[in-house]
Image (cartoon, rainbow, N blue to C red):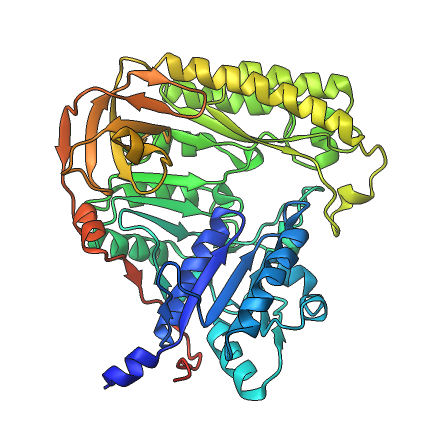
Length: 484
């Protein structure tokens, strides 16, 4: 039995996350591992004994951001004897020992394939008084077999696969995350059930190419079957998934979305470019006509579906005509919103070596035209919803000005962000019904009275300050306690 003295002496940790939903979920695993090893989360505003940076390598400035943050941490570490700094994630997988060479005050570097090694590496670095760099070349254990401390009382991430078998020329993820590895359906559904048993109302199924799920065990209908099976779990009210790939998107998934009440009518469908020539150079495996055909089939089955996308501007060789094709698809698709990116070279990708790199000023000018068009469309789509009723899962911390305006924020079933007038009894995790009264390009407002308010177990958990945990299976890995 741990004594009170030992508890008070337990080392504290903080995990900082950069990048995609995969990284956010990996950080939940890192927190779960550290707590299972005896660490405890640092209080808000306090310095931590262990700081873990979970990095992303997708953006051009990822390297600068990491080393800038490490530079800020150096004086903190100098003033705090025994503090440790660990760097993990995609940038760690890419840069490896270079991180310790450039920032010798880093104690641990670990990659995307050996997340579960963190507690042991921290202990080894402390014991040996030297940095530990351990990068596995292949997945050691599926991340979801590791313990997790969840961020949200009401919404949970569930990985169904890791890695990617695609060869998109702009993307470094397959090199850093490896080939696709699929979990068995029973394991996924058991994790979903465990979250629902703790009050979670919504899950998001995660994969680098989520609708390719089943490729490893040769079942092309596995993803649609998984959606239907998850929809039968009592108490699970909302199911989302991200991100699918247009090349593998099939009609059985559309049918499963339309016929399974818990599956939200929201679809994030990356476009990347509207030009067939650019899509060919990107090695995306589909063309404009196929892409728009998918959207037509989704909207025929679910007229209320909100479709979002990713678009890259200025890919090598992109001409003005190519860019106009992208604008054409955006006008046709009427996306609810779009994540838009200016192309930047990523070392290790074939696109970085292509001829026809587009000048920065041209990319910037096209980017501004694209975002102006998409904002116009998003605003028009949102204005069309004014006066309609909406069900919201109340969220925490998504509206920065809510407190000053007497509002709270929730997510509609289609994923849209809605700021609404709330009563004192409404809590994050509760479900409310109201009517939309105002629209902006990136959010909606409901300033009228609530038509319904349902208090939930998730709201109870949020109010009590508790979060779901999933214990995982450590598969024989040694448990290393936090040094006391």
